[in-house]
Length: 393
Image 1 (cartoon, rainbow, N blue to C red):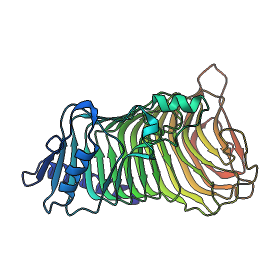
Image 2 (cartoon, rainbow, N blue to C red; image 1 turned 120 degrees about the vertical axis):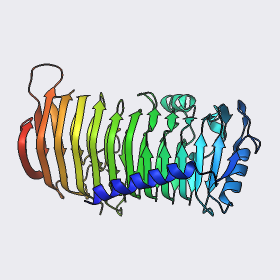
Image 3 (cartoon, rainbow, N blue to C red; image 1 turned 30 degrees about the vertical axis):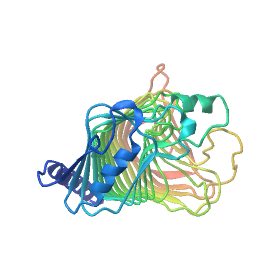
């Protein structure tokens, strides 16, 4: 019921913002009028900030318009709170500087402490290839930037945005409440490092829907302190799947709870639906999670819990994870696995997984007629209906 109410709220918020965006009473600010140039060469950051200040100080609802064309934008911070609602309409393309050393920022486009802000349309091109090459060569590189981020914000809508080639995470939410991300198109090569599509952390009431995500890391990653998330109709792949975690990096962490992933398709991803935590002491937890109505297409690890997460296999903690995982449901998940172990629960020896439920699962091995298998370590729960491979619970 909580997830249903969240979805209804998300649609109401979306429709209100759409209606507002068409309002003739809104103040209107074209970034070109503020000095932006659509030549792809001249930095327009100050012009965008000028338009933002005018909109933010308007007592009337305001629209910031970015027309067709290509606008070079150095790292920029849009700060609230503002006096009224703001809609940012992007018809054009925003490109980042190619010289990644000139950024000196973890964020390219950052909204901080804003409320009732909507972003519609547009393309963000972060020009990440040079930065990835630096990383792959093992050279000394900057920390890298997220493309568009919202911090300490609420009642946010992002609809119809395309983000390509982010240096690192494409869309990030930290300490946000009531956010709708819809109709996003996120793309980066499968070889690009740490280019998560969407990262959510310490946020509540987030809906992600009707989006296509192709990256070199998680399509969606859910960090500590995230609650009441609804994810539906996502096409994921290539990439590392949809992941809760990694958790347990620190001894004191907030938990993750009430997350639903439904009606989504995973294609040639490293993982399907995953929960991952480091093998070290932590007071973190994961509970009340539902993965349902999902199609897997040649996925390496369709269903996996990994509480010995250590991606580089170097400097691994080699302890027992303190993250407590409970009440996780997998229902109506079908398709093909690229590995024989289609269901793999590697849970903590000190905090075994509890309340795992498998229902109506049918995963076949993609390579030959060999049957798929399941593997359980320190995992407890039940199975219902037809479960293929045979449940190890």
